[in-house]
Length: 249
Image (cartoon, rainbow, N blue to C red):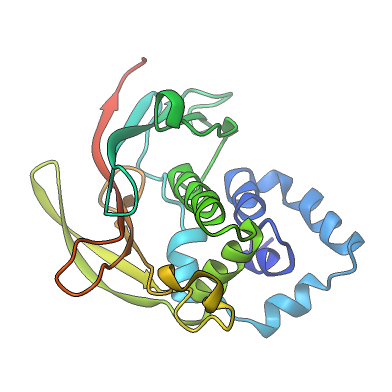
């Protein structure tokens, strides 16, 4: 069965649904049944809207093919900008042995202390849960800052990845070595007809850097809003892979 991200385009809770498909393909039948019950013709929607390169790189790629449990991926999270106080924190994705050598269980600690966001444990994933964690936090922050609905921001990001994403080669440096990667960039609010409600953030740009040469496949996520000419950025958040440690924790 093709676990297509077009399921997402018919649901308001885009990222949680899609990642449930990638993380556990065995659940896809139940999800598909729910979609059919809701009256959505998934097959027609999928056929009408081909999957974009950006969607394929982010949502239909097995990012974890080079992860071997037990292993822990650590990402550095940095928030800067003139809008609010910044911070430096970390995200850990912990892979432990599941029912078989190739079926790990995954626990993610997205940030620490009071900033930590709860994320359910996952069995036998393929997509890197860091992507979901970053996007869900970003959407919640946009809702908090603007008073808007989280589902609206999900929709704008989804449409941008499907219709207007820019994809280009990118050289990255990880663990002292240079690797080839791909960079996906979107500005989901730039042409938004409702942008007057959050004009301050209309130029927000998201950049995702992926590479099958680094553990977990996802090297970096960057979300930023530029400041006025000559001024510091309004907001600037970067999540970067810094290490992959083998062994039990």
